[in-house]
Length: 536
Image (tube, rainbow, N blue to C red; front, side):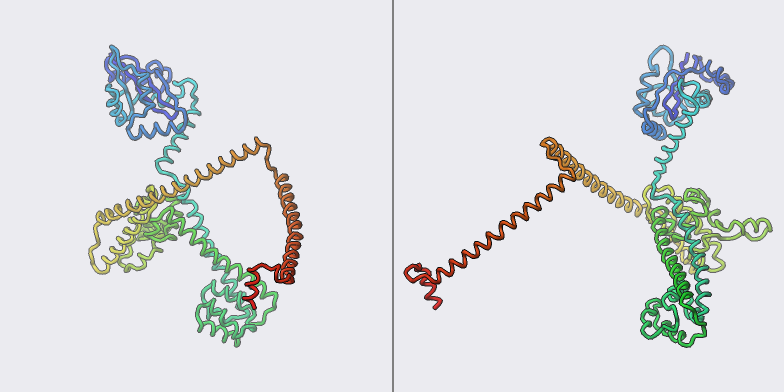
């Protein structure tokens, strides 16, 4: 007879189920298949032998990590040693769903392990009726435990980092595009509005932000003189252009404008200039976020284009899941479906067209380089998504490969093999990762040292406070103020006492000097006589 026990790992804990005795486990298979869906039939075949609930979510995560790696955890070992009948007349067989953990258990306990056949069906039935087989466990509690453990396990595997949140990049690039549109619209409004007064300035200065700054600076064109030439040069960064503006202001065909209209134009120009300055700050912020979240993609294709790809995909994870063929035409969906509908030529590129590589390629090679670039973008996004430490080593190497491919299309120079480049990149990345880890460890040591010092200071302060309390010398804010006043009064009194004493001393000294001068010669000492002779 064979005594079969089935081990079931749940988010709530370990469970050991005893199956009815049979001569051969294979004979159970048809009966189990029939009774899996019915709880009453399944209960007649399988009964709960033991249940070991996890003490905390951390313990559940540790056990789950051990099982996924095929390692026997201390909790599992203790549970099986306690509840599994290892010695006896009947031959004990342990059924497990995972062959990896089964091999580890066989090595640990030296028992026969069953992974296929009826064990798979029994495990399926246990998974279906688990909350009914274990007393005190509801379906809601079981699902909550599974959800919580699933989240913590995924977070630990992916190593979720708050600083690598890509939703900030999505919002930043959307705001950047919106700002570009708004600044363009507002600048055209300033040009049209100020153009009534100084129409010649539109032809001299074509850049929007510079035009707004000049409109803010010049104001009334009639007030421009040789003295304002330096300030004009500072804005336009060109002496010839500044002189042209000054000459144009003297012979302008524009209408006169009232001071109140000029004030409104200046205010609006100021708003446009501040928006342009904020756009530059936002671009810098986007650059820093891309270096944290997707450094390889940013190094390969640029921060703005990389951010647009992430935004269009929805997240960096979604972009990493896309094949290279999808990344290639990402952003050109309308053109693709129109081409499929009309049976025309499908688009060769989407958002990646804005990268410098496609613009530099010849017309016949644009499709080839876009396909190659999309392939490298996919690799870079996957490295960024699933790497532990963010480094731009792979992105730089992939960029070099695209450059080599461009030169190959133009000159025919054979590029390096991908395997050789990736070997170099892996070597450099390990060195960089080691350096980053060393710096992080150093920072952590400094932080711990600082915390230790602060703790010691706090403990010393507490002990001093306790000693003062014991002596009854606890200083409240009011008592401290009183003590300060008393000390100030005491110092004032001491100064008042010292001043007359000093005056008396000075008077006595002067009298003594006068007396020494008026004393007769016999009374004077020999030393004084000598001094007097030397003086004479």
